[in-house]
Length: 623
Image (cartoon, rainbow, N blue to C red; front, top):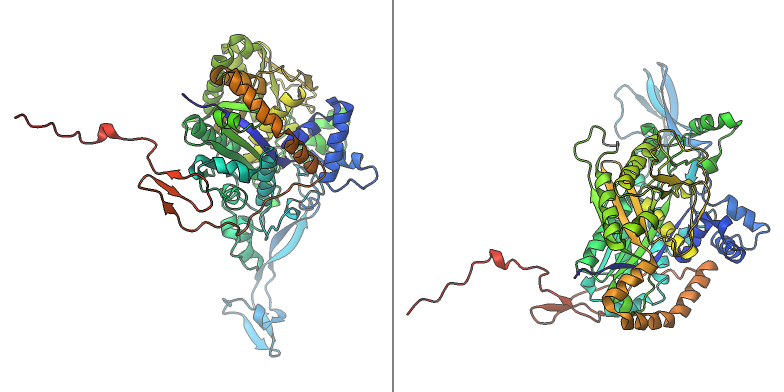
């Protein structure tokens, strides 16, 4: 019997704030929250941003969260560094420089004369090609940045880690702290090979401490460090979690699927749990792409929403300056996506493990689907694969919930990038499936208008918003949607600019959709906590659910304390550099081995056998 993957913990950070205990989600729907919850959220964000003692900090919290004009610690959009190439007129040109600054390979036409022991004179008879440092204003000034004042590198000894890896350490710890059970306690009930970590970055780490610095240093006259190459790998978020947070020797991997990367990692974990290979999995993605070099790549493709194009859309309303807050406009008249940074992590376990250890049940993921596009004309253009993934997820929802619940109690968290092409192609997929399954008014949400597009972590942002809807009963509206574009398919769809009050029991399921360059398509089905508990009661019985509730209640105080600490800015970061390093194993017969310090052994028995392929035993000879 397949096991149901259950969401028992979650955490991370994006432009809306901390993910655990729904802080980031609540920032999206702040104006729809009860007064006490709103005040708690603003206070927690102020502590996150180190503003709690500043007068008028609530206004600063609102101003320096979500999508906004790019600010510190990122680059100055008014003066982006670059080099201008020019040729100095034919000479002779004369200049002096330090002897140690002479190029390794000298032009034979150069005439070198000693001036002193340390200085030389150079005469160049012809022209000279040079690169001069320069700056220019950048045509894109909007991004979904982490809340101003929050620096993940201040939470632990970073040792010059790239920003995405700093965010990984914070996000993974945030997810663990939400469980209510200490990891060192929980791991005693897990065999080392029954743990999995699937996490990555779509781009890898491209800032100066990672692959970006490795590629730029020689051209900038700097030294390449020993860390830039290894820390730049896209799989490094999983490696950091294994080595420094969980201490895991279990299954691992860092999958990449462009903008569908988070769901690629989720699909692997769901399959492992469903098929009985693991009991505990941490899934996630971390992306820190607010860099001029990365943004220029997307801008050259015409994918980013440039200021001039955004202003052109708003001139009819009398706008004279770009509105950075409204840079992303899913399914409306738009000009491109808004890049963002984010790190999101969820903890999945099998249903029986969650019940046995009294872990919270926030949702379940019965299925996640991935398909490519087949032959393509443009590698960046959308194709048919997303019809397959979304159709399969919708069919699974119908099988589990029935036709009525599918039609009336499900909604969509769209990829919704805010590009002209996406609004057409993605809406056509949704509208086609809605018509085929008899759905007449399918609600489509898209949160990139709030937090931007975090590339590999984007579906993680959607995941956190879906969990928040079941906690507070409000689907975030597409607040930048002044008018639905004429080419959006919507015969069977509903788009709302305002928040949709649905109640905590309003929606039984949510479909998370992701589309990535290169034909990377993924869709996941999330079931609500109520539906999940009903499925578990059907399988395990009411007595098992009662025991689970008792165990859950016993750890409630620990979760409350974890939330209070996080709200005050205390994240209890575990970064175990060089601690508990494993060396050597102990064989426990031919079928098992034990790792030092691990309570349970690792089975060496194969998961599958190939008896049908083995040579049959010879029949006994007749006497």
